[in-house]
Length: 209
Image (cartoon, rainbow, N blue to C red; front, side, top):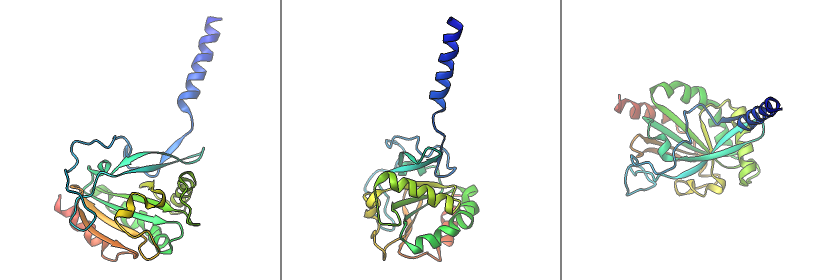
């Protein structure tokens, strides 16, 4: 009887530990491990324009899995280890965003990731303009699969956080903002696919070689 009970306990433990399989939005290492109180984060003042240091904002990183989308906290501080990070903010109804999404994985992330480049894609509304968190996370996983993205994805319903950096309208979406490892905005444009983005990424990366 003791052996049988022990076996049942082990089986129950294995089930509870395995749970559901979750994948991050991409392959960036341990993107959500920090608690936002990183002592290495640059001090204020903070701002939202070119040349300003961004605040250590918090978003919800999207974890895509067979049981549906889940999330965990992610902070700007999670990207301190990158030489350059592209923060790009999309919406499901944004045709310009979808055009950009087709080239981001192969044209940017895979091209520069081994040099210390990372991408954070933030979705603030789905195709219908909805921003309910769970529905938005599910849509973001669909977006990830459609464009074969392996970098970090997050949601910001209604652009409650990222709205300080751009106009969350058709004219202002997408936002593309490049930051260096000091969390300083080195390039920023909204509403278009920037044709000088690669040159700016290369310039920031080369400064830290």
